[in-house]
Length: 163
Image (tube, rainbow, N blue to C red; front, side):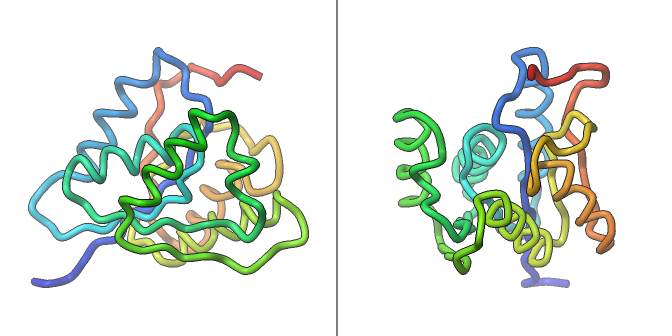
């Protein structure tokens, strides 16, 4: 339908092995390319979320930042990750601040669910294993699948994240 925007959300690991990175980048470019009108949804976390937002912005796709209800920036990681977060946040077309949650894990899960609930499809940078904590990539993928949102997994078969 002309004028319709396709919303693509992202979930993924904070650490992406070097051997997987080329396939992840090319898969993201494929998802964010083409002639259709797009909007990217990302929480701008380290790793897959920031990579997706960078590729979306480089492709001219507007990004909506979905900020978990917590002291998010303080929990993102080191200075480099926080600096990238601030740079990306400033470039976003829209920002959604979620309500405060009881724990960081619940805040991450709420952000993942918000993205799924507002996406037409989900890109998951996921090794296929269960989440290491509540609100992890595996939980968000399971939620998307339970709601019928199509999931495209970007990963190299047989490669596992480091512990």
